[in-house]
Length: 342
Image (cartoon, rainbow, N blue to C red):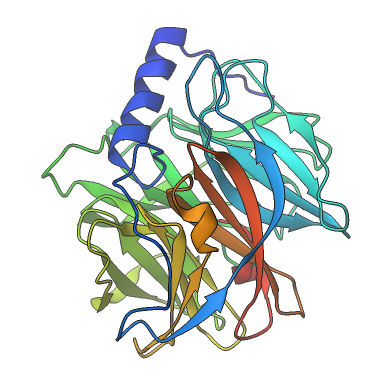
């Protein structure tokens, strides 16, 4: 097992940069009341509050839930990006009762997403400070899966996706310099020994997920409010074509994480608005998932969802000054692996 020891000050600085500049931030612009979806936003899907999971931490002054992933039968795992050392950084929420418990913590990580590997069944966590870490489903046996430079420069991992063989694909914020399009999409072989840049020159890439056929990747660029489609070759080691698939008219809100259901619909989370935009694979806006108006003032961002495999019950992570919550709603189609975590 390889361990990572980062200086505490460096970790704090990296986490602060993440929160200030990416969709993993809680100091978002003021959000308006949800109401009905404005023209062009499709129909409104109402989400219902299911569980209150975290409050603002005394030492960090905030909380931020991300990466919901359904594990086994009845547990929803979430990460708290802002959790300080010693407090739970991965939490399990019982999908029957809404009760939660801590699963994993450490002294250095700022975990921005979670995903189960189809290869070894372990939970993989992207750490903005530069690592990808895996743990057993009970939070034991932590391992550093990947750490270090890729093409001569360190990563700032945000979201992750897996292909069927267990190779990992990472949206790399790559320093998050304002006004600089230096982000990357990185592929890491399932044994963690080789990393390859699939795409670069991206404007703060955040969400990343395969389509249902696993032929290509949907990626969102936070600084451009765009979602692009990257078609891959048969081995999924090279991008054969890339195009901007849609522009999200989010106003002050920006594109965060992405999930995909069995029909290929895209669930685009919004940083700066506690809502989610839903599109079909051809770019038509189908719906907007909204939380109740009475909750909107204290919650600023919806970060991601998990849809029940083979069912339509969806769990959405939402955070803001009032805390970190899980909301539920009915998705437009059944959940698949690409609907679960990332």
